Image (cartoon, rainbow, N blue to C red; front, side):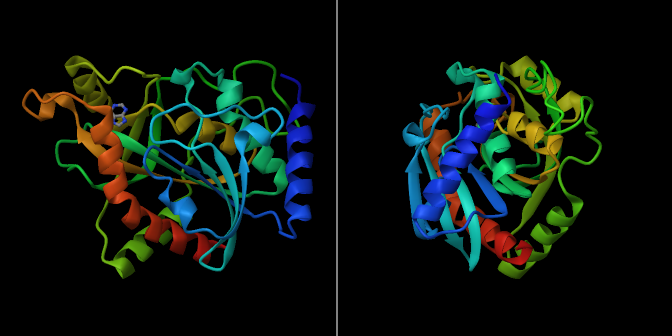
Length: 276
Ligand code: HPA
């Protein structure tokens, strides 16, 4: 994939944003399964379907729409992805992470990511919100291939992926809102299968608190280009080995994410306001 196709997309979006009399934002948000609600709260939105954007793919996952929404949230500018691209849909890692590099070219310096995740930590409950403190990547690394030096270094540091400042701010906001948060490690697998019982046990043994099929590719590419990251998982199910034989169900995952969406939206909205 050529470096300059990112620029073509960024130029197109800059034009659309300017034509609509709007400004690009410093904060971008990626909304996971069932969490697209936050996008409905964006004021004075400019909605651009992915299919209109040069080089963007269309999202096919359940509970995902495919729009870029540019507008105001809590008095601050924001650019939101309503629906993300997953590796399990058959996209390449370059396609999955494409929007993040475009955001970087648009001047975004902070990325908020959300996802639906299964709990490996036996103390977690369905409906919990988990601040991602770190991750374990079991997916192919999106930076494999020629390095684009314009975006970042060949060997990016990964010791502090999730901004401690943003995490602190989230804790403070959660206290204000009376929300309880979990804090844990997110394990990313490719999917599309949910984990076997042995795999859930393995994730727990490895130090994982929650697991899912997204987020980490975008986060790695964001860190590569120096974007600060905050990540949050909505716990939609417990590891299958913790719940006495009940199996995982995709509709349940979307339903549980939907239930938690209001709390997560409140937190993200304030985080964006405080951060801008
Ligand atoms: N495993 C992987 N991905 C998921 C899960 C899970 O248990 N729940 C929601 N997304």
